[in-house]
Image 1 (spheres, one colour):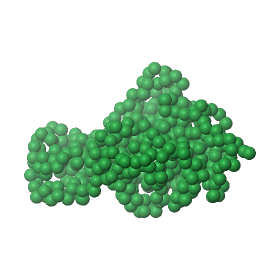
Image 2 (tube, one colour):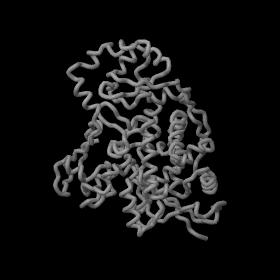
Image 3 (tube, helix red, strand yellow):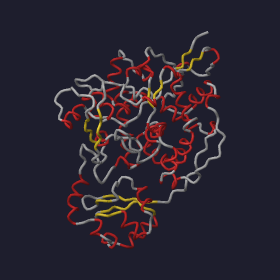
Image 4 (cartoon, helix red, strand yellow):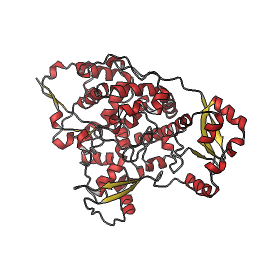
Length: 464
């Protein structure tokens, strides 16, 4: 009889995609502190389950499809839940997006206790999924499945309904780049499929891009336009980034890990592991925030595929109104469209999330606005009168020049947000830089720091 110690690791408090150009800067002259996250959402040795009879678990598949790891020290098995799994369900159900994209807010279902399903069944289901990536089953993945099928089942029901709107677009882009279709569920753990999701560290959108990486992949971020919120443009950029990471590492498990913590950290983990070349072999050398990321991704693929087997019913989606795009070469406010075309301004915002101040700065450069077909007909019929409507109210002459200048920018401060981080005992510049997905060099510049010494109790300025 062999002893199987099922090890529970829960994912990082995901703060988005790191800035690719800054990975090497993060570690310069600093010791990384992985213990900077809040403890209330973490799990440790006390949470471990022990299976004492390996023989009762029979797997009808190659042995390599099952991966049970062992952890040598207590610190290695403390993880944090991703932000997407901590979303307040009431606020999610009451959001404009949910109430207008989903018909049924109450779902009739017969929940199945995820712990009542055997490991054999879970492993068989994962192994049977038509995926290119290996869907390894182990205790790490098991605990994420328990979470999605248990406490987060309402969230899953909501995401299944919203997915009806976003998945066709994501799949189209995946086909464009000839990538594995299982990547379409990465936004489930990134943002819970909320196109305007913002993490505590400033990552934004369905794919939770940080500003630096989004800039590298051609997304604009300023005080008026935030293309990380644009589902189409951000999806295209995220898939190009994932394709590049796969080219770099030659493996999807490492590419997905690098999407979370950056290729520099994955390369360092490979080096520290003695040259190992798979996620499960290097996981203990990865940042604490990343060790559960691939398991969470596997669990997301599982629950979005086998939700019915867990009694989780999708909230019924509304049939989306047919929309099309207009090219705008003049300044335009959402209220001008709303008032004259008789359309709720919230609907305009929902299908144009990239315009963060209700302003389309078309005079500076050609912009695109998406509207329902009937609204477009009315818009065209109104002609230039729509731009003249309350023009001085929405676009005072003294403000237009600065607005157009800001709208053209794509600077390192993103949309101008400032985060103030209070330094805690034991923190280092490297650890703080890793947490907020910026570089040590940037932290020094923003806070006029010449060396690496920082004092607990003081505040650091971090721009997003």
